Length: 350
Image (cartoon, rainbow, N blue to C red; front, side):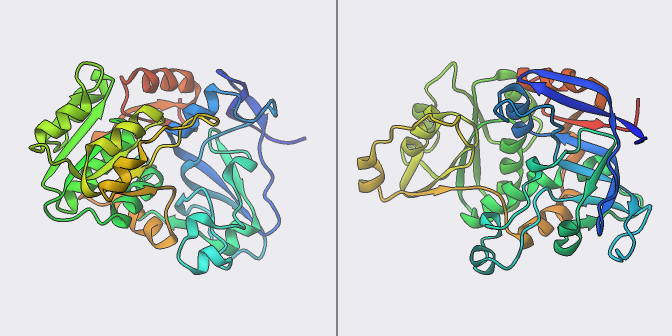
């Protein structure tokens, strides 16, 4: 008879139940992690509150995993019991054409984390494929496993500001003041941005963002954000505009905020089936570069992890709520309302 563990199991949209499930068996050539902390990501919220699996339930989500190696299959030498690690959710093959060209985030032979039970549980199993590919990082003794959960959202935001070369003197506009927007703001400042403008429709999120080094906060439910950005930039526009939210309207507004020959990034995915109408004459005549951003390459993943656990990054200011896993529904509500900036769940603590 299989041993039992606690998990937050999704049975359908907004139907998340904290219950006993079978503990995973150690896969041949793989290992099991006892989860110490797991972040609640914006994509988790989208998945848990919509029919994300087209009726294929029950399922356990959760991918911002930090934990202790609990069991190792015979013959596995890369991991040891008791080792504290952060696990990047998707292990790139490093062999396909996209990987070999440096675009690991577009790997065509990836093991998607949503295909297997995730980290909203006390234990999680990883396969031989993960052992072979790596994408796990040891956490030095004495460092906070809760802070290390930020390495995953850090990776994509770090990759974004590096890929578009946010640099000394830039004016950067970020639409969306959730955790991703805060990450982008902090990293832009670290890279030398002169002026950072953060926009959101939720005043609670903007209030929390005021704790960070951001020059201007705009509530787009109260003022026209395009007019306000132009006013703050002397009608020039911003060097870089990043739409970091699931809104087609924000994408439309983003191209109106950029300076001539500026860069616009569509960072946040919008709901499937929704299309954004863009005035392509503005893109054409203003010479705008439009980028779609997703994920990070393997070196950016490693750099982001190292930064997330360093003293240079204000991890504990971003993590506003730490809750036991059994309170996942509370965490979802706190995040949706904007009361929480970032929630981290503790599966093995009450």
